[in-house]
Each structure stands twice: as structure tokens, then as C-alpha cells.
Image (cartoon, rainbow, N blue to C red):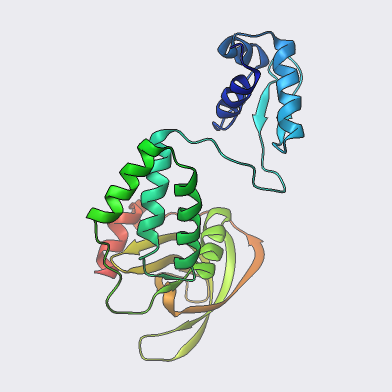
Length: 234
């Protein structure tokens, strides 16, 4: 590729895939020398992209998490998928995320090529997304906090309001978040009661991470999460 700017964009697109790229493979993809790849990587770093390099025969380049959010390169299908997702989530049963989703969608639509903007606009004009008509909504911050401890298998404490209005304190090992209809649930092992429980997210408050990590538990009988929740949630 003769155009340095175009080559830099192609390099960035490759690095944004979740893998490590050997310098020789990048050079082959771009049609340049390994030395040129090293210069292009240095240029990306100057632009704020955190490109990590490892040495040796198995070394290579990969894009890592940085302190700031650099621009992303999306292909057509990825851009459309994100636009549809943002428009849908703006009407979802999650509080505190509606305005954020609409702002992000506006930024995305502003930079979309005309051919893609037309598809997104057609969708918004033709489709009607009905918001939840009853029941409380889940809090976005609570969802994010619980999602994090599900991944790290970290014990967590929280206040939970039962169906009869009684406020209880729970100490659990989170397993998975489940969206069922217009409601979100946390499936977890209740350490105090030594039993598996499903908690409605809209009834959870005062989430406190303990920092204590444990080995992930299997659901009773080794069933998968979908099979297990269909009984207690329906």
C-alpha cells in the first residue's frame, strides 16, 4: 500500500482484532517491510493508540487498553449493529442509560458514511420500539457492578427488598445476569442460606464488593443457565 495514511488505517484495523500480530505477518498483510511496520506502530503510539510489542520469535504487536478511548475503526456491519443496539437500549428497562445511549447514537450517526446513515435512518423511521409499560427498571450502575463480579467470581454484599417489602441483607457468590422479558435477574449462590437464588435487579441496592474471590460454582445438577432459570423465573 503506497498511501501512508491508508496503510496506517489498515494497520489499526488489524490491531483492533483481539489477537497478537507477528511483525512479519503484518508486513505481509500491508505489503511493506518489518521496519516500516515498526515506524507505523510508533506513529500510532504518537496518536494515542496503546500498541504493546513483545520481543523474540513468538513476539508481536497488539492493541492494549489505555487511559483514554481512542477512535475505533468499524466495518459496515459492526457500525450498523452498534447503531441498532444503541437505539434499542434507549427504550430498554434500564434506568440511567437512555440519554447516554442517544448521545452515543448521535455521535455515531454523525460520522457514518451516507450509505450506512440511510440504512440506520430507514430503520428508525420504519420501526417502533415500545418501552416497558409496567414494572420498575433495573439500574445501569447496579447492572454494571454485578456484571463485573460475575466475571471475577467475587463475593458481594447488597440490600435486597423481598416481594412483601421486607428489606434483607444478602452475601452471595454471583454467577450470571439474566434478562427475562422486561426484567433483569442475578443468579447467585447465597452463602448465608447455602442455596442458589435468583434476585430481581430492580430490588437490589447498596452493592458492596468484598474483594474476596472464589472458584466459580456449577449450577445444581450441572444444568446450563437457560435451563435452570426457566423454572424459577417463569
